[in-house]
Length: 108
Image 1 (cartoon, one colour):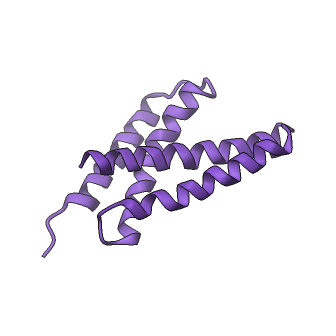
Image 2: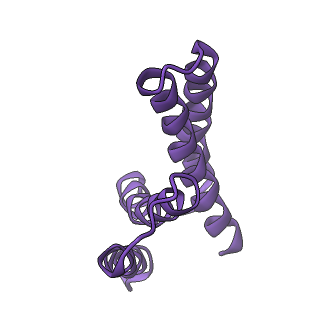
């Protein structure tokens, strides 16, 4: 369980961080090295989910979506300095609840 959580967090940071570096390169006119580093980090993001033990690709990526929403709210708060409001936090919690349902619902 701990490994799964760490993989979710690592993939989320890689996805958001890689995308952010490409954003900085294209939108904030940072040097091309930002874009290259972002692309390499996004490759790592693509590989990390393969280490999960859950058997379903679609279910894993759906669950990652919920985790990424929470991480994106935190990224916006800590990196972009945009304080989340009550609705941001409520939406993030709803997403985490959905992740729990998808991954841990009893299936036959």
